[in-house]
Amino acid sequence: PDAIKKIKLTKKKGTSNLETLMHVIKANIGTGVLAMPIAFKNSGIVLGSVCLWIMAIICVHCMHILLNSYKYVMLSYTK
Image (cartoon, rainbow, N blue to C red; front, side):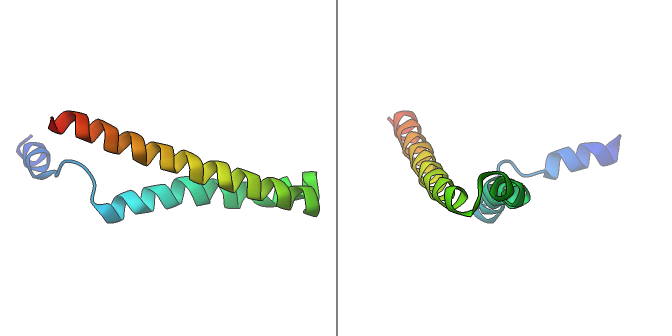
């Protein structure tokens, strides 16, 4: 029990910038790499390439929305 209490007391809160970056890379790139061959097999090289660019643009746009909402929330907490 004492060892568990020490672990709980020394555990830091939140994640570092590097840890956050690794989570984003793992979430966005990891699943795409696994699904990419099957997606290109089913759609073909031309349609697959077009859809890949469309989905990439949508993904980047959604990341920008997330970052802007984070800034908005943080500004509302600082006021």
